[in-house]
Image (cartoon, rainbow, N blue to C red; front, side):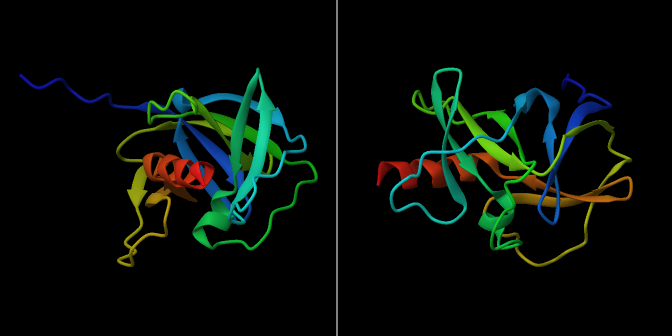
Length: 155
């Protein structure tokens, strides 16, 4: 007998420039205030640098710049969502996502999560675009994003 999928999951709506990112609550380790980053030589504009957090130097990314939704980010009053990396890389157990404000907890059920009927292929780093209640949100492809970051950091 197949295990039943949960009827609801706890999600987090993270405000980013021009929209929202929907993540499972379990993915978000912490939300911190933005602090200056150290530059990553030769990095694309979406990789904003490395951020120090609990002894780690985390890659900080802008999802709107990565997906082409924005060309630059405001850093005044910015927050950073620390995400648990899924790829199992010893050197990158976490990554950081630039946020424009505080993430909001939300309960997701199949009825509340409506895929947009956008037939166009998604931008790099995007798994899906959805409506949650009346909010448009992007579900990021964290595996692909981690691969992209690893490629940049490997030089």
